[in-house]
Length: 115
Length: 110
Image (cartoon, rainbow over all chains, first blue to last red; front, top):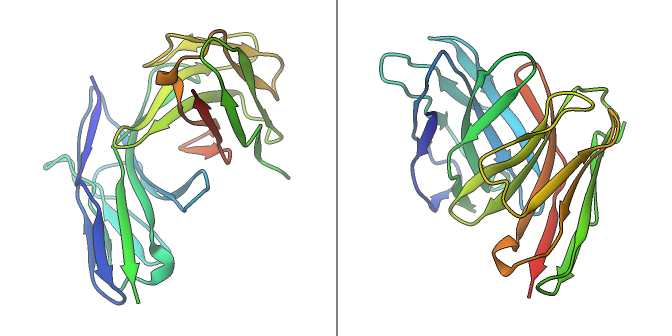
């Protein structure tokens, strides 16, 4: 089956520190990969995505590169801000036919950024 | 556009009570989903609907039923709530490569 493994948190950083959250996956088929972010009290929002090997997704200073050879999609940001404090989810999707798109999520990583 | 809306935002039930969580979308998407979120478990798919008139089980369907009333609305019903169903429930829709989530319903079963 499909699965996503991401580094366990919580992760606590000081403002302007470098962030890496590791994500690896196993998949039957060719997945598209995603990072979602959940701010306190809210639903999930798509942060970035990559749909094929070597693609780099980027948004709001965050980046992740689809590495097929290592089955990884690590999230990075060069300088985090207090406003980046949230839970980050790595996810994959494989088209199981027709319009049945089912996301598989990692367990989430809580990031806290201190001023 | 409201996107994906869910009602209620919060609910407390006693064991054995029933309730329906409502979800509506105004994005004209075919696919809709119900997830539950538990600490340390990520999001797990309960049921999904690929199009109006179809529903399928996800990873954790036991204790739940769903209805795809029309293209806009997808409801989740708990017939006899149990404490194990205490969770945050999210509805979502799907359009190519992106799922759009509602704000969630926090349900506590005592």
